[in-house]
Length: 399
Length: 222
Image (tube, rainbow over all chains, first blue to last red):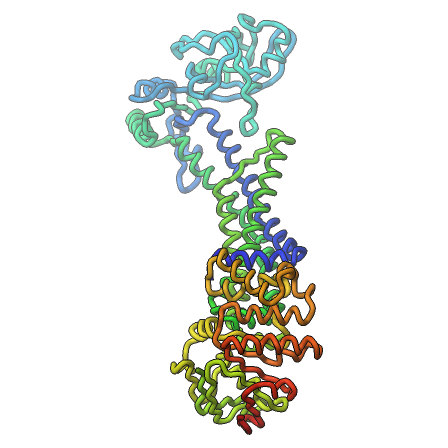
C-alpha cells in the first residue's frame, strides 16, 4: 500500500466528521498557540532585560572596592581594605588594550541655578563616560581629562536636569551650585532614559575629584574599564587583577565583567522562558488527551471497517499506519493552525501596542510544530495498535 | 484448488468445548459452483471462514493450490486473501464515507496499484456491473441491489480465482436477490470458483454441487 494512499484515506476519515475533527484540532491549536505566545513573551522580556544591561556597552569590566567573602561581610572589615583611588584608575589607564577608564562616585546633592534648585543625583566621573557608557553629548562637550588634583570646576547636565533648570535658556557657560560649590556648565548629555530605576537624565556629572570633595570620600565607588572589542575579557580581567594586587598588596577588590553578568542574566531569563513554555505545554497535554479520546472512539466506530480491510488483504501494519496517520494529521493540522494563530496575534500586538517586549522564539516555534506531530503519534499509537490487533473475523461481525 | 483435510474448529464457551467443525474433508476444484447449506448454528459460516483464511482451525490441514497455508503468518494469509479470494457479505460491508468507485478501488489500493491504473480498472468494472452513473454516490445513496453490485465489483476487481459469498441475498428482496445470484452465476460461468453459504434452499439448489452441514459435519455432498 502506498504512503500517499495511507495519507489520503486518513484525511478522508478525518473530513468525514468535520465537527469533531475541528474540535480536536482546536485543542492542539490552542496548546501550540499558548506555547508560542508565552515563549514570545519570555523571549521578549529576556531581550529587553539584556538590552537594558548592554546599553552601556559590552566590553566593560567593573572593579569595586572590598571583596565578597563566603561569610558575606564585604565592607565590614574596613581596616584591611584599601579604597580604590584615583591613582588606581590612572594606573589602569596605562594597561594594554584598555581604551578608557572611568572612576565613578555617586551621591546626592542640592543643585541650584538662580532661584531654582532641588536635590538630585550627582555622578563624579572621569572623562571617558561618553565612550565607556555609550552616552553621546547633545551639546557642548563632556568633562575634560584634567589632572585629578587640579580638575576645573566644570559640570555636565543630564537631559532632564537641563529642561528643569534651564527651560528655554542655553545652559552652556552658566554657573550652577552643587552642594554649595560653584560649577560651570560645559555640556548637556543626550537623553538616555532610565536604567533599573536610575534616571540618568536627572543627573549632574562632575569631575570625580571634585565630587569626592563634596561627598567627603577617600576612594571611588567603582572603576569602569572599557577595553578594545577584539581583546579577550578574561585576559584584560587578569591584567587588571594583577595590577591592583600589586598596588594594594592583596586582592581587596571585586571584579565583575559584563560577560559574567550577562551570562547569569541570560540563564535566568532562559529558565523563565522555559518555565512559561512548560505552562503552555499543559494546554498541549489537554489537546493530546482530545486526540486520544477521538481516536479511541474512531477505532470502536470503525471496527467493521477494520475487519473488512483485513479481510480484503490489508496487513496489520496498514491498519496501524492508517489510524496513526489520522492522529498525526490531527496533531499536525492543529500545530500549523496554532502557529498561524500565535504569529497572527503577535504581529497584531506588535502593531497595536508598541514597545511590548514580544519576540517570536523561533526555536520554540519549530519545537512546538514538531511536538504537535509527536503528540499526534503518541496519542494515536495506543488506539492504532488496538485497531491493528483486532481479529479480522471478530471485527467483521461488529456491525 | 482448495483442499481441506480433517479440519476441526473448537470453541471454548463457558468452560465447555464446542465443536463447530469436526473432521471436515473437502476438495473444491477450479471453476466449481458449490453451495454450503445447513440450519443456523450448523457451522456453515465457520467452514466458509476457514476456506477464506479468516480463521485458523484447531486441527487439520488446508492446502491451497497444493501449498499448506494452515500455519502461515497473518500478513502472508492477508496477501493470499488479497490475491486469491473475493468476498461478498450479507450486509455488503461497504465503507460509508467512501463513494462507490472508492469502495471498489480498495483492494487495488491495498495492493499498491498505481492510481492511474486503478482508475481505469475501476471504471471498467463499474461499466460491466452497470454502475457507471453511480460512481460518486455513497452507499447510503444506493439501493440494496446496487450496494451488493458494488460489493461484487469490489470482490472481483483483483480477478480472484475464488468468490466467497456469505448469504449474499440475505439482506435483499426476492427480485433483487435473483439479480445478484444471476450476476454471481455469470461470473462462475466465466471460470471463477463460486462458494456460497445460504440457508435458502431455493438458492442453494441452483448450485451444481451442494454441501449440507449438520452439527459441524458434512452430512451430504452432491
